[in-house]
Length: 437
Image (cartoon, rainbow, N blue to C red; front, side):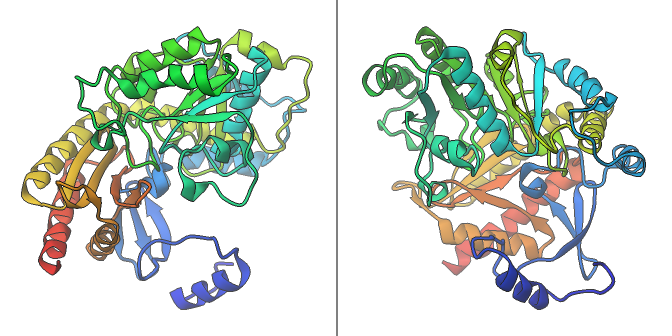
């Protein structure tokens, strides 16, 4: 398959003919990436780009990390696949090491291929354990593209084509910049979090299976709630018999800085953690980790995943954890994130397009608006900025309902020079757009 080079136009033609028309691509002129090395990727012409989006928040420790690849290559040479119906040490050893990173009593894991599958299993666990069927999720959330995951997702753009699972209600997110009640923190007394109780009382049977939420919303536009939000939300949910599920697909593995799990930033311990993306640093891998009593609700039931827990993905997952520990990447995420956040706030003072800067660690967002008073989303300007950054060697992402939030989520191995490059490039791009408009 690598015997010849294909032009962008040839690839585009094949994609249009042989892939579903829903297959997305970034940039007005699509970019062909052929090689990766830590925080950088290279196109077919050999040009280097700083991956400021971590391949959609998936590359946690770096592309083709030198501490990861050799052990995985050796495993591929030895045994590529064997299901969990047979014993192999990799899955048990990795599960033990993963448990050591967990808060509270979360110790028991099941491995999947994706975040969607992890979401589905977390819902199944909650229903089995509580004997309830109803769920509360958040507006602006994203939990995947399968039936239950789409039902839990709180954005209409990602909810289409399928009938939904019954019994899912959506509560307001802790989105202070666009507060649905037009209130201001902290005088609001966290009305968004307290609304969960009203939803339970008036939109459910009064008993729920679970509440699922991302500690910081990813696709929703890096929505970072007030520090008290989850403490209030978890207390309400547990008062009504529900479990608390933390979707750590994007926030996990140190990305929010210093702490391993995003929910730890809010001082809370969930009942279930779901994860994917950064767990495998590029291989299809997801997982669910929970407590022993909740896990016991699956005893006697058949639950199987053909590829989940295979030796190659387990070897890579283990190597990623070792790299995180060895290089203290969560600490670096905190340091580089603070540097970027300060830089972005400086850009906010300079550029009228920036409505708000938010996030923590290396999970950061810049919300672009056409007018700060009306907060009209600047979606076209966001696309323009992505192109301008790409032309200057920086790849960034976008999110939010209106597609107007710049998402900066690079691999956790970036250094000070990279952070300064990101700030300079955004500054230049925003300046060009503001002169154009």
